[in-house]
Amino acid sequence: MKTLVIGGGGFIGSAIVRELAARGYEAAVFGRSRYPHLEKLGVRQVQGDILDSQGLIKAMRGFDTVIHTAAKAGIWGPKAEFEQINVTGTRNVLGACFATEVQALVYTSTPSVVFDRSDINGGSESLPYAGRFLCYYASSKAVAEQMVLMANSEAVKTCAIRPHLVWGPGDPHLLPRLVERGRKKQLKIVGSGRNLVDISYVDNVADAHVLAAENLNAAATGAGNAYFISQGAPVNLWDWINELLSRLNIEPVRKKVGFRTAYLLGTFLEGLYLWFSMDKEPKMTRFLAEQLAKSHWFTIQKARRDLGYEPRVSTSEGLDRVAAWLAGQQK
Image (cartoon, rainbow, N blue to C red; front, side):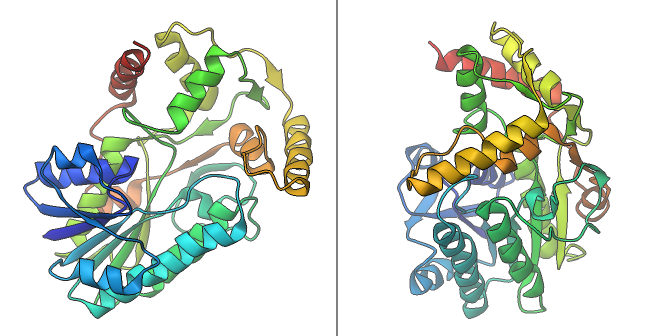
């Protein structure tokens, strides 16, 4: 299996590259920059942009498998930017796969594609796509995922991986932001504080992607399917955050704000930021209020059955690794 990881310099992409290398597979990275941490692994890097169709076709020649992790993430920003990178970029990746000898495409999606603003407890892949989205990231990923799954064929077999709240050492976004706001006492529990959510340790997510690629290149029972990926059991969101903070000797979050109050604040801030054309992400949005207050966790039975996925790194072990990494970052 010769694999090109698109967006392989990112948090999830880098973990996938490490997992491929550990299993003895030949892997290369396609991205807009050069990544020193990948150069140390001896991984071949191809610089390019997913908006360049011809560049993608050239980069994919000689590979039989593509794992597409590149995306514009976040809960704020112009709609056109999300659609250009997440939708048009994915369309270009698909086109390049069909124009070359690529036989398998694994797409990194998100559970947000089915989040319809209601609690989800043990949801399965039978859930429909959401009818109304509160952020352009989720809506653009839903369109892209559907394109990928509809493109599944004998020529190119495709599937989508939906990891929830990916975390681990090297995380450039979620964990550093939580820790910074925790130190500044800027965190508040939104809603009752009893909501359950899925989390996904990054090495487990990488394992799921490689298992999916192996499946598509063999029995292909996963072809045309999407898969939720997590630790296998939900956590109380705020208990998990407080456990992480306690390991870093940061005071736990105790103050609360009602969901309705947070949602109205998000509505106000979104309007304010749009009015003044502010690029910086608001501290609260409607989508963030929903995510922080509602339960959203999913069964991984389908991934277990079809892909043989099992979370190898437990939540407790993951917290140990993350706490050690974060403590080292502060030195």
